Amino acid sequence: MKNEIFFQYLNQNRPHIQGLATELSNDFATARFLYRETTHQAMKHQAILKEEIFKDWLMTTMKKTYYKILRNEYSIKN
Image: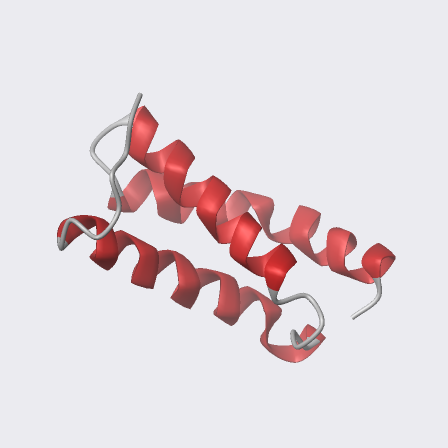
């Protein structure tokens, strides 16, 4: 996916991933971490992401990250 299209899709889906981060977490620090880690993973996988699955991929990635937090695979610092 080209950079311009990638960032356009990322910006379009920002409210969705911010909302999910808030819904999943109990605090601001966790929500912020979820949002940042999800966008970081999206940037890392930009080359393989397709427009048709972009939103679903973001949501699934955030949920997987959240479950890793629950299993203490990530350490969140304020």
